[in-house]
Image 1 (cartoon, rainbow, N blue to C red):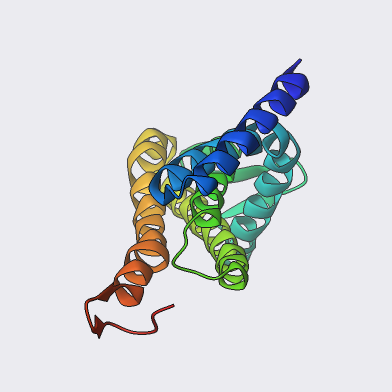
Image 2: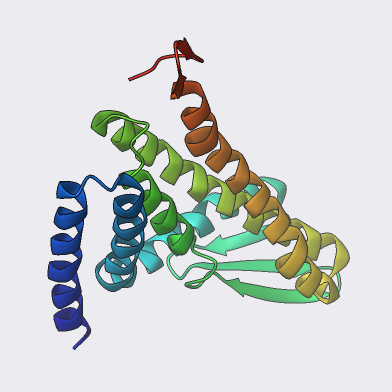
Length: 198
């Protein structure tokens, strides 16, 4: 049922996208295109990429844990095992922790961001995806380190606050460089430009 609804949505999305392009409404095309692509990725990509992403994040975070001896990762299952002084805890990297939502949102916005050429969008998309995966692995590592030193009682604070602040701080840096800075540098105001103007 979800696949059929996804195909119907794809057809409607493509038609409205085509109409917005013909009507020369770039802002509406960006909004409709980005939101629609995100929904399509939720339907068609998320079910297949969530677990592999969780495994990659667990493997990267687990590499740090193995080097330091603070925690170990069972990346095949997307699990990080922290054996602190106060007890042991297993961190399951699931849908929310895999980074799939953030990657899909980033790629959806980038696909319709016209400050870059098509090839630049592909390159920036690949680099940004790798960056988000690494940022997520750093977040999991920070959570593991806090639990290792502070014990299981610090789990809620580490996961809910510190980990998210680290991850979203790194994400804001990415969004600023990719979207805000690129838009400012490439804009043209009268006869004045900041940099390479397309």
